[in-house]
Image (cartoon, rainbow, N blue to C red; front, side):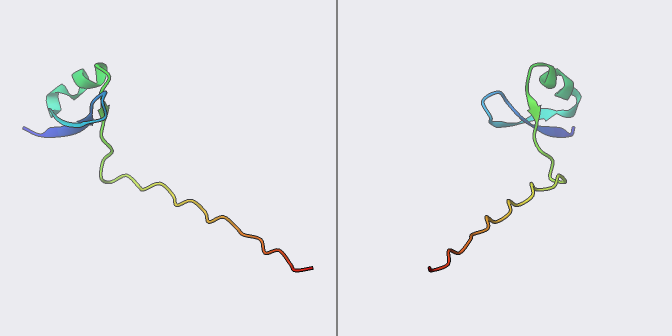
Length: 54
């Protein structure tokens, strides 16, 4: 039987039987991010301005 990785209300990972996923989702648990999702884009580097010596 295949299992699905989920996150419970406390933020802990758990494994649930594939045929019970909908039951757990209805109870408020969330699916864990799958490995095929893209990573968030990197934050752009802050531009620094050089002060001229006057």
